[in-house]
Image (cartoon, rainbow, N blue to C red; front, side, top):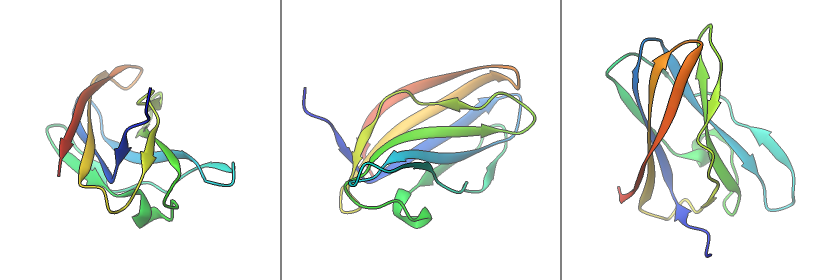
Length: 111
């Protein structure tokens, strides 16, 4: 299976908490890390994140990471190849409560 390339990730918060998006990554040299977070996302809001804005290198494998305030953090599961020139966006939403949340993958769309 060919890994899908994206240029951004979008997170919609449909849960009973405040959260922020981050990116877990494996860089082209095999190093791993988690980016700094983007802005806090309130219930009913969403944010589009470009990994390069937080120092993630082009060619890295990236995964959605969700920082839940006072709760259990979550990840999106799937890794994508990051290319800042790509118009494609991986879309996610999160539902539930601080201690019992679920991440939903909504597919990849053009930005």
